[in-house]
Length: 157
Image 1 (cartoon, rainbow, N blue to C red):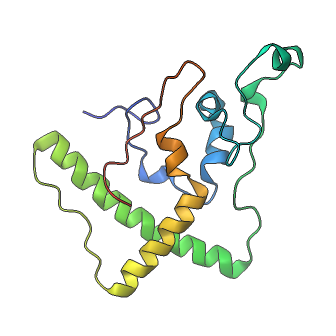
Image 2 (cartoon, rainbow, N blue to C red; image 1 turned 45 degrees about the vertical axis):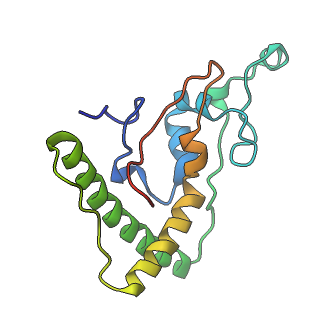
Image 3 (spheres, one colour; image 1 turned 60 degrees about the vertical axis):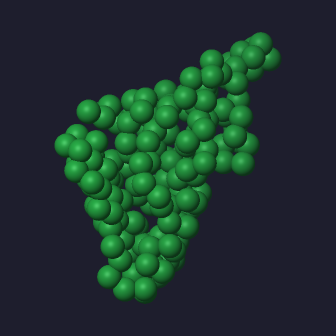
C-alpha cells in the first residue's frame, strides 16, 4: 500500500496539480520547504540554516514563495485550465493503473490518446505542469540532513 501524500514515498494525488503550483503548495505546507533548500533556480530564497541566518532570525517556514504563474489574461487562464484538465485526466488514469498493478498485480494499461491532436495538447499540458511543478527538483528534494521526500511519479509524463 502506498503512503498517504505528502509523506515519504507517496504519490501526489491528482488534486495536487493546479494553477497555483508547487510554490503555493509549499506556502500552505511550510514544513516541506526544508526539502527545497539550495535550489536557486526555483526557490532562490530558501537556504540551509547557518549561524549567520540564525542571527538574522531567518525561519525557512516563514519565507513566502511566489508562484511561477502570476498574472493571466482571460484567454490564458482558459487555455491553462484546459491543459490542466487534460493533464489531470491522463495523470489520474495512469495513477490508477499503477496502483492497480501495485496492489493487485494487474498489468498496468496506461492512457491511450484518442488523436494526435490530443497527444499534442497533452505535451503542451506537461510543459505547463513542468513550469508549475518542477519534477526534477521534486524528485531530488533533500533537506539539510540529506533526507529525501521521494515522491513517486510512477509513469512517464
